[in-house]
Length: 454
Image 1: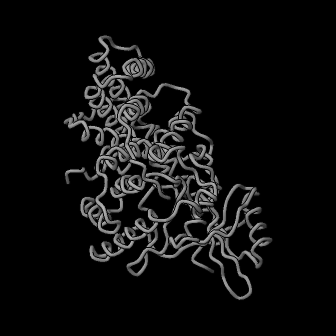
Image 2: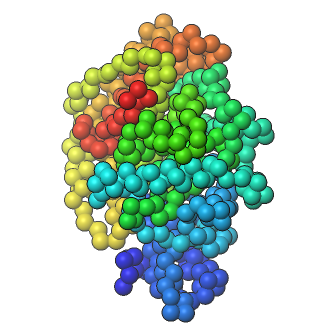
């Protein structure tokens, strides 16, 4: 028995993965398990000629279209590895189910078992890797079909444009918050000043062991862009992993590359990256696919939407407001919802994947209970804010969304209402997060990002 839980082959996708591995890599699949998460990923062990291959099979997302195609991710990872960047070795592509096969790498993705000095050594190694990656000739990446902007001076905008196109293609209901943020970025874009390099963009994902980075992971949204994007996006993951003080990390990166970082570009790229959840998930939050992990997506979006208003407030030098938590109302549904939550919390299931699915249902039940308790109060307070802005009070929360979006779009070419709208959207974002679960729960807790003045 390996460290991977032996899984019964219980679906056709897993059977096809096993067949591909045995047909294309040789040997015999001795263990395979689907990872308990929101996208199809399998961990497999293959015995071949006396050696054991420990593999990861990474499938396509089912809850949203990918911003960059999965084969683009695979090609980027392969070229990075060919040019000395530590990534998992790529073994091949599976047409059905859509996936690619790579090594499964050892190590940890967190610092819970590290001293500060050990963490600092790992992070410094990661900075060296970023500096080497950003110095690579982009020619081989271009030859491999890795996407880049039409002009070098637009290298910092390709990613946003792809996110925006995805958002537009699936949008069905108003989203005034995103329209405001996109309008602000159109008027105030980050300037790359012609910088171009291979980037991973969703930075800070790696496994480490013995004080060194074993492999850079998850290059899903990597492309040829502005290297400052890697330094900016990294800040977001710091809230849960803790990489150290970013002012010092930026100084260290500047030493390694021989010039100071472009803080203005980093700050704007940071704001841009805070939208990387709401843009692709906006439609999935309202019409989730059957396999969608709705609560994880909601929590990500609520948290990063708060990052967005905090980031823009720092750029605009706006002091952000706070909001009061409403008192729960008495409800006829209280008994049944509380009973449902208790039963889902205490139900015991051995299968890891089914246990994961049960946890998603428990979180949805708590979300529904919290909406029942304070949802009307949250909607009414949001509408009160709109009354002050619009001069009248929309009849419902959905009409309020539509009217606020029309207001935002009507003023898209001016910064006249920027400060007012940042304050309104921040209050709305705070209230939205309150609905995710009980006060004090992990789902409803907000972790602040380091500011640029820290």
